[in-house]
Image (tube, rainbow, N blue to C red):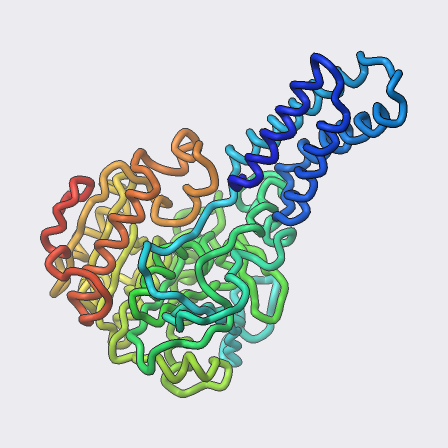
Length: 454
């Protein structure tokens, strides 16, 4: 809840409590009116339903008392108590499942954003749900002018279908995620880029991720002076959101459970190949001046300075991508390299690579493959990020203060995770392509107690 919403809730509770001793219908009705106004001007979401019902009941009784001063007091007092419970219930729900804030560091340049769809007629989607040309939604972020105006970027413009798709994958009731439609980021949609040529950062999400999975980091890198591009890998993303509209849910059969290991491994290899080919098609579209890409994005993209970020499945896809075309560097967050072909693993990462390995993945089966790959690379550094889990670098831990207790997040506080990840990513960009605001010396000597260099 916002400070204004908290204030309105406290006002209603205070008026209701006062009325428990002696009915004051005018006071209660005034508090209800203020709360309703705050609700109308704010963002509706399901957590506020108990408070809404309480306000309706409380306002109705207050009107009755004004019209009939001799009304019995027992029912109004009971109503006041129920109203307090309703407001408290909404406040509790809003605290347990808040609307996360996505903000830039203080003093950062303003950021603009645009979305577009790429259609690759040479490929079809791997899902049995769609046999048409391969569709890949893309979002771009970049520094813009200080006077840029327009709507803020939203995590989703279609909260109901997005929530349904996400909840299905997470085994949650769909209504519990509809409030994600209220999330706004720091980017101004449609604002033009401020600079002529920008180094490119390409982000590849993991299985069940989506283009906003690391949006706090991505928007910060855009503010630092990069053209940042992220894709929804359709049917492998939690919920792909084409610019043309609609929501495409994840197809869990692309990485099936309960199948023989050989079948699973083959599916994983195909999945990473699809992700890598999506990214390669985007880079080809940028180089060829494809009309599907907005002209402003084509104009500012400097592919001679390219760094690829990859999380989990996206890390394996990034390794494939940069083995097949020139990349200035890679930053890998728990890269899943088991499905990567043996010849690529044995050659090591093809570009200078920074690996941030969560403590949860330190020593697992993938790690036994990852470490030899790092050792075989011409330039690669690996740090274990102690106290973290696999999804700490994504937005998922922001969904609730109880994510550590649920095993979704580690022991390191979200602001600190953001600080460490941003510091190291900035350092690697400065070291490899000389861009941004990072200190390249921090790549080899970060001085961060949470990181253990291997």
